Figure 1 (cartoon, rainbow, N blue to C red):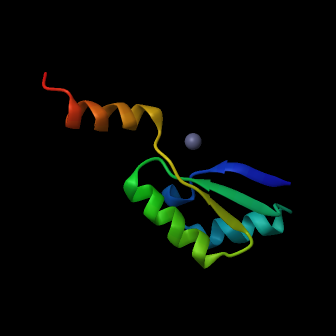
Figure 2: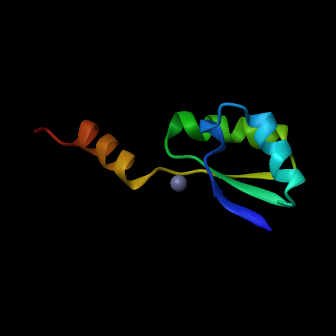
Length: 75
Ligand SMILES: [Zn+2]
C-alpha cells in the first residue's frame, strides 16, 4: 500500500509517524506541498527518506488564489 496524499510537513513527530507507517506496511508515501514553504519542507523530508517519501510539489488552489490576488489584482 502507498499513501498517495500526505501532508508530512504538518506532523508533530515526523520520524515516529514514518516509523509507524513502515510498521503498518506502507511501502511509500507521496508527500504533497501546498505553497513555497511547505514545498521546501517536503523536499527536505523526501531527501531524508529516499525511496520511501516522494515529493509532489505544487500550490493548493485556495492558496494560489490568494497569491494571485495579492500580486496581480489592484483592488
Ligand atoms: Zn491535501
